[in-house]
Image (cartoon, rainbow, N blue to C red; front, side):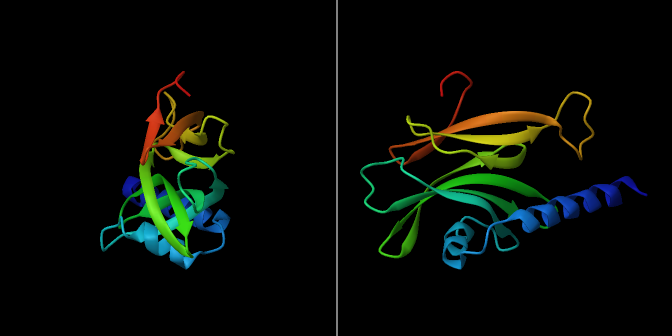
Length: 151
């Protein structure tokens, strides 16, 4: 099998697995995320959960792990949204490196841990095996990736 065909087949497998474990569709939330996309891209929500990160926001906040799916690529994002008067509002978005496994509950200091798989030294490009936890914090309208030890 040609390497390009193998790589493309793997991407389709990853997308298929992501779709299989994705949460039920919230089309209003997807519409808010799609505002960040180019015309040839799609959004696939992987996981979402209610969080309380900003006491100044009167609505329900939600952390959303989602994937941008392009014609020949994909990339993961973490967004914070707020539902106010039955309308989703995008508060912030940050890219997430690696293949996202999911996230745990927000820590008391407002930090969100996101578990990913990243490329190990001997891993083929298709198949990262190293588990890594990334940390993000939402403050003052910004979603920032934290460096190790600052969480």
